[in-house]
Structure formats: C-alpha cells, structure tokens
Length: 187
Length: 134
Image (cartoon, rainbow over all chains, first blue to last red; front, side, top):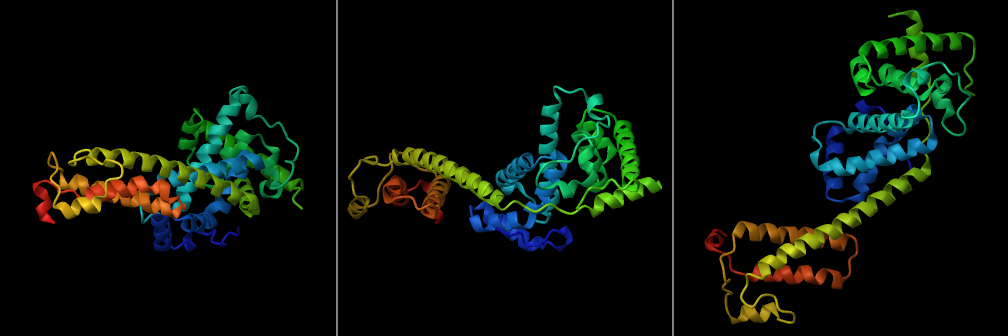
C-alpha cells in the first residue's frame, strides 16, 4: 500500500474526491482504497502525535476510516475530506486521553514531568514534544499546528479558554528553552 | 506574537511526518470487508422480509416450486389487494441493489435464489390503479 503523496490539501482535487466518495458509498473497494491513500498518512501522523503511541495511533486511524465508511452517505460533495478526517481522529485521540485520565488528576498531567524518549517508530515526528505529558502535547499540537481555538480546547477538556492559553504559552516557552539548550534528539 | 512562541512553532512545523505503517491498510481493509459483509447480510434479510410481504398479497402466494412464468402464461395476475406501485418499484429496486451487492461479494446462487423469486413475483404482479402510469 502506497500513499499518493497528496498530503497537501490544496492539491487534492475536490471533484475527483467527490467521485471517489460516491463510488465508495456504493461499496466500491478501490475507491475506498484511493481515499485511504490520499489521507491515511496525514491522519496517522496526527494520531501518533496526539497519542504518542504507535499502537494507539493505528487504532485511531482505523477507527477514523471506519467512521468515514459510516458517514459516506452524508458527506457534502464540495467539501474536502481531510479536515473532517483529522477532526474525527483528534476527537478519538482526545477520548482515549480522557479515558486514561480518569485515574490521573488533570493538574498532575499538565506538570512538566519530563519524560524519556518514546520507544520505537515515530519518535522523530514528535521531537521534543515526546518529553511532555500526553495532555500537554495534545493541546499544544491541536492549537499551534491544527489551528483549534483556545475556546474549543478549553471546552473539549472541560476547562477554560485561559487554561488552554496558559498551557500553550508555558509549553512553547519551555520548548524554546529546550531547543536553545540543544536538547533536540532527532537523528 | 512573542519570539519564543514563533521559534517553538517553527520547530513544530519542521518535524517530519512519520511513515504510514504498511500493515495498517490490511487492518482497515479487513474491517471494511467485515462491515460490508454484515451490512449485505442484514440488507438481504430485510429485503427478503419485505418482498415476502408483497408476495403474500399475490394470488396463490409464493408457494415453493410454482413457476412464475407458467403463472404469467395463464394471464395477468390479480392481487388480492391493490399494491401501491411506488412501493412495488422501491422494493424491486431494493432487491436489485441487494442482488448486485450479493454478486459483488460472490454470493452463491442458492443464497440469491430467494431474492430472485421475490423479484419475479413482484415484477409479474399487477399493481393497483397507479400502475397504469407506467
């Protein structure tokens, strides 16, 4: 299975994608595979960055494409799929995080408990982020890279907008310190 | 925008995208196939029940072994109660979709025969007054 290299959403041909969605809706396996090829790498990358766990990232990616199958009939034909898929993947990753958090107090999770590097594949894609707790990593990545607002992040985690702002600001500040100290361990 | 935030954001943007595990497609495709099989099974069962309901409205019902072509040769069938044409067409279309899905997944003739029987019975049945619309 190879990805098509169409990771830039602006390069995705909406009309062609719409045709693929229609075909996939009627059970065309090749069309579904083409949709997977277009978007799986981006979805998996996001899932890995949010979960920090290769196995969990695969689960989230699979769940996201199963959600796509369920919602194919309701997809607007003129809207690109990528943002919807990434939103589904992010929500799935957040749900996992919330389930895991049941035994951990939120304030404990946002403290800088500097962690060791993540084992196995994908560690380079997280860089210094892997040193932060999962909750911190998730909030920062969704706000800074994916463009989620502080308000929706606060709501999603049952906290305030200022909680998200403060968390992101402190994390970016600490990240810069680490960069300046030459702590980036990417090979 | 503070400088330290810009530096950190540039750093995050520079992180490479991880490779997509090759095995992941096999997992996703396996899950898709299981889902499709489940849906086809449920749809075929639903269509069969629906078609049976219509077939029971026909004179003589849908007794096993009765050749529909022989019945047609005897003359137009008169349903014991008028059948709504729109419902009949929708049911035939639903059966067609179930048949197509069945052939797509290489279903056996034995599996599909009840659907063909129901389809034949519906196609050969006269509809109510609306049928004359074509």
